[in-house]
Length: 120
Image (spheres, rainbow, N blue to C red):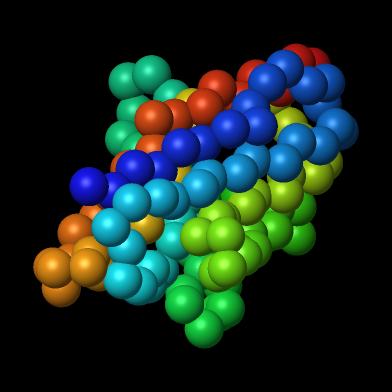
């Protein structure tokens, strides 16, 4: 069993900052890529940022220069530092991880989602 638990969302004014965290636990052999997605009502979930096991990152154009993804492999945790937030960043944010379990099966796991609301 593997669980991803996200935290750190909330309400912030435009221009403010938030830091999201997502910790993986359970029968983990190795974590490969870790991602943050976001979703607003009636729209598809979109990839915001990705970090590979070696630390390579990429970002959606809409957040480049404002968001930073990082990970702590010792803690099986991924972070998303969000600066200069805009009202259009309002969404439910989900973490996702590609995990090789201790029985050597690979799955994608999702966190439960955390609400980020940016007021104008």
